[in-house]
Image 1 (cartoon, each protein chain N blue to C red):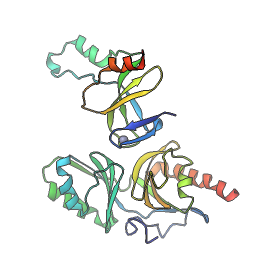
Image 2 (cartoon, rainbow over the protein chains, first blue to last red; image 1 turned 45 degrees about the vertical axis):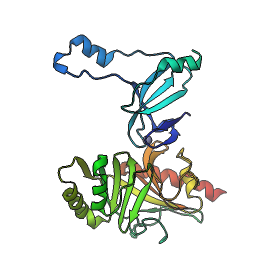
Image 3 (cartoon, rainbow over the protein chains, first blue to last red; image 1 turned 90 degrees about the horizontal axis):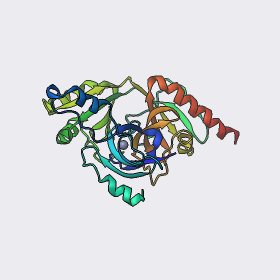
Image 4 (cartoon, protein in one colour; image 1 turned 180 degrees about the vertical axis):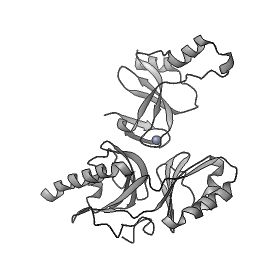
Amino acid sequence: MLLIYCPYCEIERAETEFHCGGEAHIARPSDPEKTTEDDWVEFLYMRSNTKGIAAERWRHIHGCGRFFNAVRNTVSDEFLNIYKTGEAKPDLEAFAREAGK
Amino acid sequence: MSDLLASDLVTPDAGEAPLLGLASVSILKVAPLTRFSFRARTASVKKAGAAVGIPLPIKPLTSETATKRAALWMGPDEWTLLAPEEDLQAVVTGIGSKLGSEPHALVDVSDRSEAVIVTGEKAAWLLNTGIFVDLSQEAFPVGTVTRTVFHKAPVMIWRIGPDAFVVEAWGSFMDYVAGLLIQCAQELEAA
Ligand SMILES: [Zn+2]
């Protein structure tokens, strides 16, 4: 069982309270009228599916209900950083270097 | 039970037999009460508190109580407000008139969930048969409230005394939650 820190509840809780929401920092096209089909495909379906250090959206679905972001090593399952929605994407390469990957 | 937090609000249902009555732990159904889900932006929180007659807690996982009122932190912009059954309209009118056109949501969810009070020296032990949360008094002092999972059902737990918890579950899950609590308590009888 993993323990995951919720930045809104400010506490670690069991992973069964959480739900992974996929890759983080994928911005919805700001002007749908001018967005091409290829751009929609990119936004809706294309994900980097990283093996290693990745930024993901997580939701404390059985707690405060809020979405937040986390940097996780998808190989070891280790959580390296947790930050609130709206905060800038951390430097993933720095985390990768630190992890020795 | 008069020394319990919100004991004038969350009371055992006099018409219902206790679900469990052991020397070390008992389970009592809570009488009906008014429940609201309230959501608002930071700028409106103070005014809303004034309207309800109780400051809305800002610190995560905490609660505030006053005479016949309780406000429970559910999330950074979400609270559960409790009041007696007959005060439903008073809370709606109070918040409506104070907040006016400020964006907020006040939803009557009184009948969405049911609650039981779990009391006794083994209360925390019993909840921990299905909840992975540290319920020691250091980590989870009186007044702490949280949503979590009991076995497979989403629940809300609120510590209203050193050995007393309110456990709320959505109506259709309550048989499951109460049933499993009673079943797990049989271990105490056997011991
Ligand atoms: Zn949370």
